[in-house]
Image (tube, rainbow over the protein chains, first blue to last red):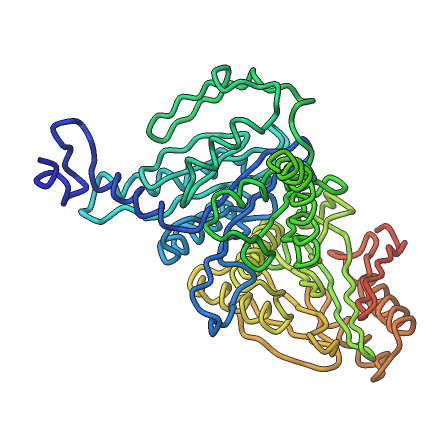
Length: 282
Length: 203
């Protein structure tokens, strides 16, 4: 039945679905996992690096994390070529806002602009949607640190912690259990409409939000679960931190040693439990 | 009365030994009436300084535009813009408006990747000139050319460059009604940038 209504973006199916958009979302489930976690004093984004060949020459500083402006960065899951177009758009829009108002663009407005651009490819022109999902991390003086997720449909929502890419369901369920222990997911309300977002956060108190170090460990823990490999190493993951220093936003991608330190800390946390279980078994 | 002389300005940029200096006055006027005594005409882009003389509204617009384009460049290329590239960008931006130009005459001064001095000046439609000694722009150019030609020496150390630049500018603006009211001098070396404010005749 769906076959008749899925070849054109501009056609609804009888069930009221846009199949092309849904297929685009499927394309992202094969991409490297990206995790975003909001912390008290910053934002952590961890991603899985899919290295297709050892012969590949790394041209830019990252294949997953991109700086959009002084106060906003994003992680990409999906078709890199599609992502490049959208990242360029985001950079232009952020720059134009700052040119016009001499003020950094509020994070949600930037996310909405990018999402409106994506939405156009689901309604006009006969062009296919972008096969990219983003995690936007940003800081502005109105709402502090914010984390947003956007998908090919042009929908976006704000999160305290979320996962996109392969095995995101496993990642999300782990985050639900482990993030800000006192919060319960039923208290978190979010409504998603095309191009519009309302987020009411009354579940998690400030004190139960992790700090950046805690968020890094949690991110690595989730990444360990979502990655197929049994052994985690700093080559396969990229850890990005956004924080505030002297009132200025600082973007940092952890180098090999710093990343390895976090991985070791997570392993140390896990291994007493493993040792206890092994002793229990015998 | 020329539109380029409506607000008044005086800017000199000079090269020294592994350093550059740029000095500007601080007057903003509406023809004869002085409106402000701390109007910024020199803008910093990493290790490059751009001095914009001419119509004040275009000075401010162009400085914002350059800031936008520099940010975009750094995001895309993941490196800093060298002074030569900035100068070429500015030249392009001006020529884009060939038949309805920005009324500014800029100078660009900076240190390139090898900490070698770079100087350039251009007219309002972007025709550049590259020199290795000094560039001047504004309403007192005749005075400034005379002062620079007399006082300039090659390979001056930062401290001497500061003295020369200051004396050249101060003497030039004193004979020009449309510029003056104080001065700002920036000296760029590989170790950093020193900025000094000069007290001058407040007339």
